[in-house]
Amino acid sequence: MALTIPLFHRPGSILFLDDDQDYLEMLGMVLPPSWQVELYSRPSAFMERMKDEPARWEADAGHQLMILERWRQGHALLPLILRYWATNPSRYQLAETCVVDYAMPGTDGLKVLNSLLDWPGSRVLLTGQADEQIAIQAFNNGLIDQFVPKQSADITRQIMSVIAKLAHTPHPRLNTLWRSVLQPGQQSVLQVPSVARDLLAFVQKHWVEYVFIGEPFGALGVDNEGDVYWLQLETTASLGDLAELTSSAGASLETVKAVEQGKQLVAAEMQQQLSLRGALRSAQAFGIGDDRLLTAAVFPLAPEDLPLPIYAFKNFLSAQGSRGILDS
Image (cartoon, rainbow, N blue to C red; front, side, top):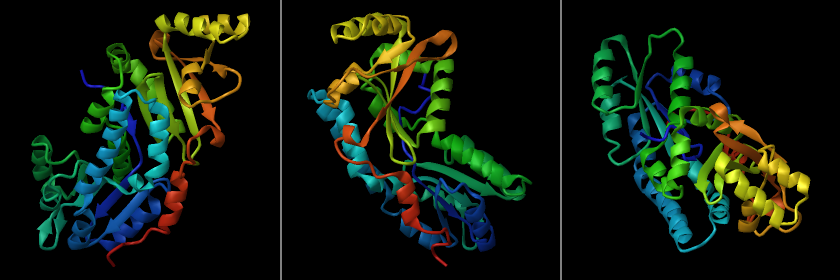
């Protein structure tokens, strides 16, 4: 059974291609300001923008493979991930989803999408009523990920819903890469529908970027402001071991009992990986999944806790300026 939550997620660019410039300008005004949106009215300009995307994706995948290789060599994962976030702001520019109109002068959207040979992002086709059967066949053949009929009264809401869903759908290659850092039992518990549901709700509410890891077990996330958090996850079976670790670190008996009972968690392994000095950090715990299959706690990381400062996604969006048709 495939994992139902992305193990690795980041925001990316959402590209629109439609020869109707008025429609594009309307989309630019109504789409969420928290999205990185690029608008194109000419296929040639769109294809010029996309021509180097496969190479950019490969270069980014190479950075991630290097992280995993160093982890296999014995390096701690948390500082490696934080350095990747701090030194690769261009990852936000990667085209995550392309939304293309089917009916355009001289070509059609399906031909345009099919020409994106090795690009691994999500493909959405906008269709007129006469094109719907073509879109259904393309979807069934795996040529597109979704299609949206343009004649729908609530098309903008549908487009936003489709893009949001695709953004939080596990990416096959990236999930395969990051699954290797999880133990089999950790993979199994993340596949439980109620666990995936609660975790996805948490990360979507609080973070724009995150990655799940197994040593220690949890998720490292960053919000729109560039603030970093550690979400520690513990199974019922691991609470006893954590309580012993808490006791050996010199914590109070009250804290040890709270950890044993799943009321608090301590972030000993996180502190060790990041070489954080000072008292053992503890936080109030809460349940994840039906019957509290996992116990979780959130630990904010201060700027001085990080190897390097994180470039905030909001700063990236601000640097893009106001939305406009890029080939007009």
